[in-house]
Image (cartoon, rainbow, N blue to C red; front, top):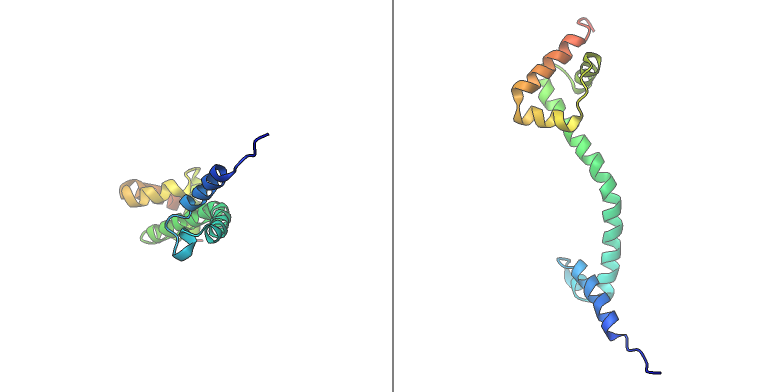
Length: 121
């Protein structure tokens, strides 16, 4: 029986790893041993950061909303409370986009939230 030479398979695996390491600094981009370790670690970070990305964007939308509603004399938490009491169900991403791209529509929502809040509190 003829022996199996594995050069083609190894070369393909190495090429795949080095392609994934494209753009890395130093030997990490062109030495298979360093590249494999760097790519494995980068995959772990990528998995973790797909979850973190959602948290980061939600925090960004909340910061934008807080800045936008303060111009109308409200805080973010009072604004969201007012929207809830008014029965308006819009997520923070859409609210943030409204505040940036359509200030008139956002102002209408702020007025609606203000009217739903108790006046003295």
